[in-house]
Image 1 (tube, rainbow, N blue to C red):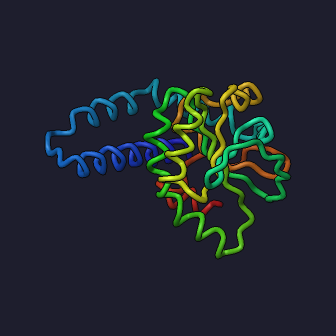
Image 2: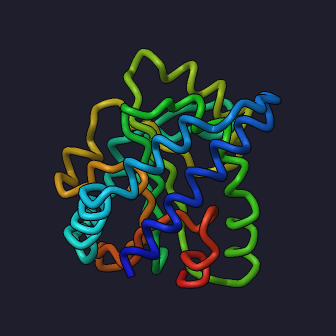
Image 3: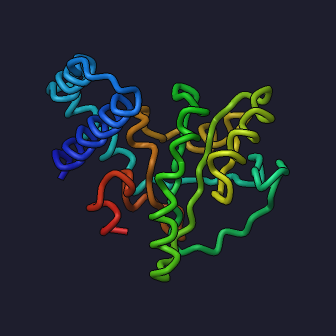
Length: 200
């Protein structure tokens, strides 16, 4: 099962890298991709992903929405949201990732959100970006341009990580589904992996 997750992660990595190269019209040999694949396919890489997934699956997750800024249209503020969804999908971007770069790819989620909504599946989506407070205004502009209408939250005080010390260290494991009892039930990105989407 965990080999499947590794295979999916590698395919996602190749997909993202190749799409980036196509957009930049870069036809050089994909040396970086090859190096990353060699690292990921090493035994230690396999073991780390497997260990982190095993450790995180079934864990309790806290989603402190009232302590994070919610961005809607031209306003940014705190929301005291009652989460009535049976399942919630968290997409968490930690400070090691380029938040504005990731924000520009959120359009990829539009199809999945529409599909979930039209099929009546009771899944709430939450995109959480850990950003410093001084970037809030800039992130608001980027969200309004690239992610308008999506449920984006800005965590300026590291509340999400502090509330969830059991989060995996690997960013590729920062997309996960948890149930009404706040227990992690699925780990993986359904946008890049149809098998994960089917399991939802």
